[in-house]
Length: 119
Image (tube, rainbow, N blue to C red; front, side, top):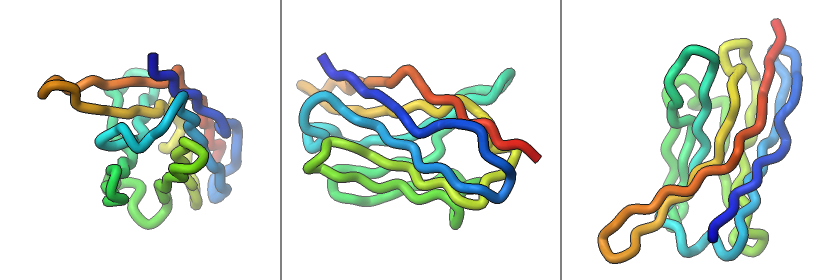
């Protein structure tokens, strides 16, 4: 059973920084990609950033230049460094991992961590 545990959320003023961590149970090398999603109240969950097993990254346009996703295979952990935070970044941030078994895609989710940016 795959478990993803997020940490690092909190309350920060606009312009500040936070670093989110997602610790996986077992090796993250088995996943096609890992990513961070967020969901604000009344809005759909959206992709924030993702990183593949080969290190390729993808970002939501709204966070490009401010957020950086990275991975540490030795620690089975993925990070999201968030700089120049804005009030509109306020949301619950979820860690995601996906893998393919016999052509079937499996998605795993953490429970989320709250990020609140005050103006």
